[in-house]
Image 1 (tube, helix red, strand yellow):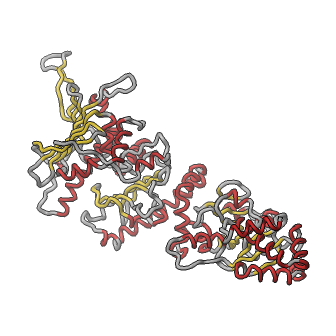
Image 2 (cartoon, rainbow, N blue to C red):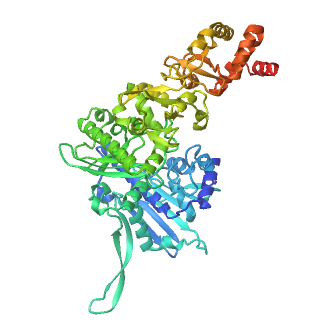
Length: 623
């Protein structure tokens, strides 16, 4: 039969597998066992839907068979099996689109294992194999088929014979070299150790024939060898074990074996509750955000079990969106095995558990913030934005849960701080929590509008996420202290040098500048906040300049939204004398100066000027 070719991206990714860029080759066994477990789960789910199918748990198991003479290692399951078309579609296309680019672009560290993260777990077999053969017979079919490949050059699918339903994966192992020992994957005791390490909590028995010794009958010191079938895994779900029995390593291995993540989790908590509603749960906070976390494709949710049997892979109802980064599972005897999503939404037990989990997650995060500051800051760098979205969503109804958890970069501390920390060190005469919103800390620290606030010794919070200012608008205040943008038209700060008289004295000058700029600004006035800079923009109303940029960048924005801008002039700056002179002697020149100053203020804010060519010409002429 003609050999079929892998898709081009699949071929490239398979080359990575074959050339072993991943650090721990042994995880191939974890991946194949996990796939075998899934295949048996599918048989179980079929039995739930079809009453004519009987699921006898004793008939379902995973078997590992090493063969030293043939240099083969076989992983077999008695699960649902695959048809010819499924072999072609499941094993002929590796990974999702973009997975190779994800690794190529170094968005994850080189030593981070991405196997399984994109549905490529089966192909990890090629890290240790020179040839992989898959023999499968699907439930309900009389036919069996063999898929075979030696690597990136392609694969074949041919009919074959197989007695039982299920799948056998036969790996012809590579020869060992001075650098790589592949013989270890033929050693039964090493295989047993790997199963205990990675797959001890798989709920179906993992069997292997183990060589053993016993005394010969009638002798005192003569032994004979024999083989006995042994179950390698405990099959006791980790969440049902006592916490005292478990180590960090057990939780971490379970996390990776379940594909919750591919690095050690940042934090975990094990919950056991007995009462009106009883449940066990293990919750994890990942070390980094999944690659699709901030996309529509990401699906939040915890695995849902009833008495150790999975009834839902992703139960989103257990987590609010703002805690959607949490991975893990919940097991409760109070759930029915045939519960549906529609019923779940109205299930009082589930709502009760969800409420308790939300409280527990917040408690764990606050403890982390207090006792493990560095770890919390790492968490916040990854997931802080989703907490801020939580503040903003649902008209601020979640603020009691989230306002203590959010952090912003501080002009004083030069690091992330909480609102609690900010308000605790506010000066006695300080009325507001001051903030600046923009693209980066570096740009915000140089804003002209910060001069007066900084001169008073007030701390400024830098909002650099597009959601920050929207979240704060919903929050309104914190501990009765209102938030105020340093670009606000009224900072409500008293100054020794009040420019009110200057504004009145130069009323006609500012009026002329306003008229020359048209509707670009609401007003031109003398600045009370500028010390060294010549000009800046202030705003009135609810929409700030940064909010204008964010809203107008949205694809579904119905109309241009503009902040009400005020052009402020520093009357103590040399530029002001030129403005006055031009008003008295050359009003056309004043128009150009007004336009240049306005455009300079726009550029400082990171806004696009309408006519850059005209701006350049005006600057040349004025020079």
